[in-house]
Length: 76
Image (cartoon, rainbow, N blue to C red; front, side, top):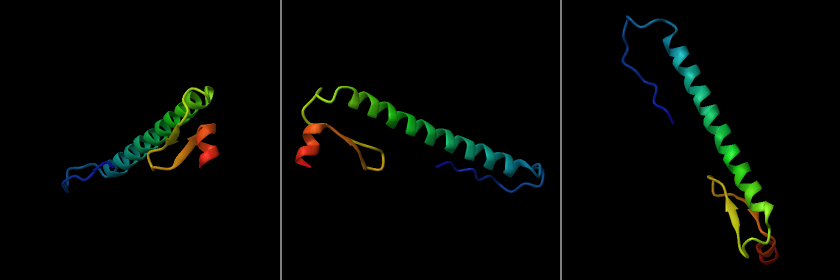
């Protein structure tokens, strides 16, 4: 979360708030894109060798299970 507050000042340009809000939105979108890419990369790595380790469960930042190895799926 980004704090984009600023003191009220008559000397500010009328489009400043819109420019800041637009920039913040673009930064948030980029962060979300990077989180998705990181999750996909982790999934590709883990699923590339399903027998790499006997018990693997991958969870995302929201603590949701996104992938389980075969051995865990049989138990779970």
